[in-house]
Structure formats: structure tokens, C-alpha cells
Image (tube, rainbow, N blue to C red; front, side, top):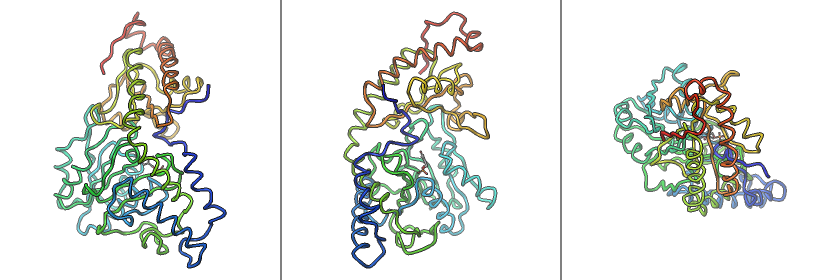
Amino acid sequence: MEPIYLDNNATTRMDPEVLAAMLPYFIERFGNASSAHAFGAEVSTALKLARGQLQALLGAAFDHEIIYTSGGTESDNTAILSALETQDGRDEIVTSTVEHAAVLSLLGYLEKTRGIKVHYIGVDKQGRLDIEAYCRALGPRTALATIMWANNETGTIFPVETLAEQAHGAGALFHTDAVQAVGKIPIDLKASCIDMLSLSGHKLHGPKGIGALYLRKGIKFKPLIKGGHQERGRRGGTENAPAIIGLGQAAEQAAANLGCEQTQVRGLRDRLEQGIVQSIGHCLVNGDAGARLPNTSNIAFEFVDGEAILLHLSRAGIAAASGAACTSGSMEPSHVLRAMGVPYAALHGALRFSLSRETSEQEVQHVLDVLPGIVVKLREQSPLWRDKYPASDAEVCNYV
Ligand SMILES: *Cc1c(COP(=O)(O)O)cnc(C)c1O
């Protein structure tokens, strides 16, 4: 059997049509879009088209609201640093405890080196933001509120459209890291008041090393990368034409497949999740069941090490992710699951399955065939498990 890839929140396979769209722009059409001759013009025309494709996926009112960057991380950094430079007299940021490292590590650095005050808003057991605490943290000194659209580990979706209105109520800008949301759920920026949004090509079957920052028309901005007049002077450096064109193609396909995410992908995800919960006891599903990405399932297995399950899955040709992050050589439970207060016994046993439109029914069935055996075996080897459940192999007790 072919290896099974269920780690699409880490990165996705590039769509072959995306590659086909990119290829001519490496050799045949290699021009610099800024050049005033035919070599430049054909690239410049293609870039314009690609910008329109991404604009359509985002529902942005103007194509020049898109600034291309090197990826989600650069977009997040640009948005945060720009807000601090343009919002006079405001030096505070409101964010959540469950953001991606692309946001959290910059904010930690700004706290240390620039004395910026950051308010970290917590989440409940289901991963939902404490909206009251969020509103209380917003004030006359808030430069920016930055809250992710959807969490990469649990798939929990945050009500960013409302959060943006609340930020505006305090006179602050609102940014969202939508790297996991774009291409998976409908987005219509012209109908919202979100000021800035980050996205990344490789999370939606596009190329790596390309992303974009949406910047609403009229919002003050300071570039992170100063250079030439590319991107209307908002991000210097010769355009990465093949990647931008690939991202455009990926965006067009994502738009055409949005329905499939809600039906096919969601259906397979639910089948996988329900199958696991029904056949393996003592596990819990992490995330907001009512507002979750259609492709993501995060399940914590009590009294087993997630890393050990991953290893056995990997030997069976199945690629998933654990909730852990490797920090200086040792495995630390994820900051997201800790923020959610996942019980200790389950904290180290979390797995993330992230599907895509390429995931098949057979693949899901194969995981359901092999995973229960792996968990039962690992639990039999666990002294903690044997102490707690002396003769409970067949018992099924879920607290989902
Ligand atoms: C992957 C990811 C990023 C980083 O994007 P890159 O393009 O890899 O820099 C940022 N935020 C979230 C939520 C992500 O999942």
C-alpha cells in the first residue's frame, strides 16, 4: 500500500496543475516583471492574473490589497511590526495563548526588547477564546489585536469577523493568521472589517516559500522588507513569479473545491474520528465541535505516548502528527493543548490527523484497521495504564 499522508496542516502536496502553471515561468518566460520590454510584460501580465485569482478566493475588494511575501511567517511578522509603527501612541497588542509560533515568538521578542505589553487571552476546554477577557484587554493603548482564524493543531475556528469589530471599537487594528483557514472555509473579506490577513501557499496545495498579506485599502502600512518599488513599495525584492503564479492557480482550485472540503473531506474526517473514538476507549477529541475546520481531528489517548503511536503508525506507512513540539531536544506537550487544560493523563497522548481533498476512503479505513491494535499494545506496556485499569482491555468508556 502507498504511504498515507494525514499531515496536511503541516504542508500539502502541490497540485500537479499548480506545477504545470509554474513551469513556463522558470525558463521560457523568465523576465523581470519590472522590465519595460516584452520579456517583462508577459510576466507582469501573468502576475496580474494570479493576483486576481487570489483576490477571488479571499473575496477582497481590490487586487492591490494583496502583498506577496515569502510565506505565513513573514506575513505575520510584517502585520504585527507595521501596526506597532503606524498606530501612534499605542504600544499594546492583544492576542491568544494558542497562536502559531510565527506570532508568539515575535511577540515574546517585542516584550523583551521593546517593552511592548502583550495581553494573552486564554481559551476554554474546547479551545474557544474567552471573548469577555478579549474585550476587556482592548483599550486606548491597543495598537493591534491578532487572533488566528483557525488553529493549526485542533482546527478550532475563531469568530474573527466579530473580534475585528470589537478591536475597531477600541480604535485598534485587527490582523488574523488565516494560514489554516484559507482554502478550507469560505472567506469574504469585503464583507468583513478585518484589516490584515496572513496566508501561505504550501498549506493549500501551492508552492512553499510564497505567501501573502492582505492589507485593507486605506490602512497605514510600514514595509518589513525595504527595497524596490515592487508590491507598490510595500515589499521590496523581485517578484517570485513562478511561485506567485502557482499560488494563483492553487487559489483558483481551492475556490472550486470549497464545497468538497465541507462534504467529502468533512465526511471522511468525521468517519475517521468516530471510528477511532468508538473502537478505542479512553480518548478525547480536542477542539470546538461546533466550529472546527473540516479537515482536522485532534485526539488525545489516555496513558499512551503520542510519539510512540506516531512511530508505530509511521512503520505502518501512515503519517500524522503529535501534539508535541520538540523544544531543545525533549518533547514538550503542545502549548495549545496545555492552554485548553487537557488532563495530564491525555496531554502526552495527542495525535493530529489532518486530511485534504486528496485523502481517500480506503486510506481512512486503513488507519481504522491498524490504529486500535497499536494503542492497545502500547497501553498494555504502560504501568500507569495497568494500575488504573487492571483488567479493562475490552472496556470502552469515552468522555468525548
Ligand atoms: C504553517 C503556519 C504558519 C507558517 O507559514 P509558513 O508559510 O510555513 O511560514 C503560520 N501560521 C499557521 C497557523 C500555520 O499553520
